[in-house]
Amino acid sequence: MISVGLEFTHDVVVVGGAGHVGLPLAIAFADRGAKVVIYDLSPTAVEGINSGRLPFLEPGAGPMLEAALAAGRLEASTDPAVVGRAENIVVVIGTPVDEHLNPDATTIPRALSTCAPFFRDGQLLVLRSTVYPGVTALVERMIAGLGLEIDVAFCPERIAEHKAMTELFSLPQLISARTEQGRKRAGMLFGQLTDTLVPLEPEEAELAKLFTNTWRYIKFAAANQFYMMANDRGLDFEKIRAALSLDYPRAADLPGAGFAAGPCLFKDTMQLAAFSDNQFSLGHSAMLVNEGLPLYVVSRLEQRFDLATMTVGILGMAFKGGSDDIRASLSYKLRRVLSFRAGAVLTTDPHVTVDPSLTDLDTVLEQADLLIIATPHGEYRDLITDKPVIDIWNMLGNGVKV
Image 1 (tube, rainbow, N blue to C red):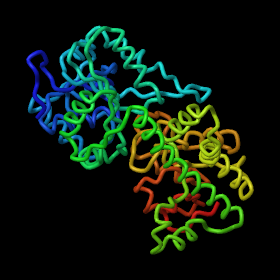
Image 2 (tube, rainbow, N blue to C red):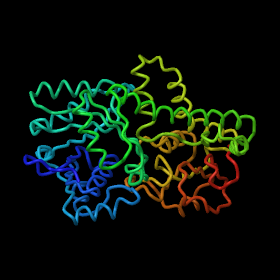
Image 3 (spheres, helix red, strand yellow):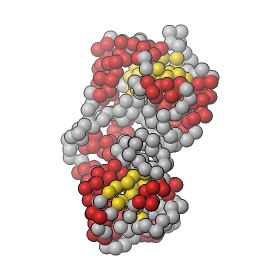
Image 4 (cartoon, rainbow, N blue to C red):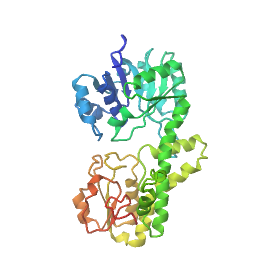
């Protein structure tokens, strides 16, 4: 357990802590014995957390949340004054990109301005979500302008959704701060969760996080480009991929084809492009491939079917299999394209609860003339239908040709 100083009632406050990044982290710290408070603007999410309800799917987090609440080690609040209670402030507000794909580096300083009146000498401020390179330095200047003695660190999360309660305790943690004291304090904080700490300078850590997500996005783009090449020649990319990677370790990391999106990969690639003064041709090419896959699929379907007279059913609207998270999901881009090209579009998802336009699976299977598995939910592996199924993910094991 992290020791609480005489001036603080809590070990950690997680700012923006009701989301996919902050809540698992808060639960993890509480599980390790820390006294944690979550600050979030959503009254609904805060009420749910205090009642022991998760606002999203995260395997293993539910029982840990209940245990932390029962032990009095976790609470959530919409009152920004709670920021002043804790020795360690962990901020999980990231840097978004605007409608022009430019990062807004002022988002975090603006968000912190709400909490700033409650900052206190002796605190450690940790930026946790992805930030545009230079934002850590920007926050350092902001803190210096307040005249407070607060250490600033950047310790990025690298956790996959639905694996948080495992990876928070197993993955190495990047630790960065401008001063030795800041690095030591950040190391002591995250050393409660994982044994492996990797020190970097703040700008190095900022790029490390962007490189990590961008590299993954580029790998997906390579696979999707290969898929298009093979598919245009009437060949099955998945059959080729399985053959070339069999007992061949140098090809083991070639992913399958599929819609690659979500709240991080595309956004972080665009941040890196902006950082390189838009000279990141590889990143832009990856974006064109991945974002263009829904249109490619629809265009291929138009060559095979009279789409304008057909009802198309999209199976899966979350951005990845097993998830209820629809942020940046390309299933919605697929739906928009089909709304112009098909006679009608029906959508369904076994996990998503925030989209009232969704239909149950049985209705989609009954009314659709053509089905597209857009998200590889495990529920679709046993799909039985006599309708044509477009299965880019090869969920049914019949190949991925369109």
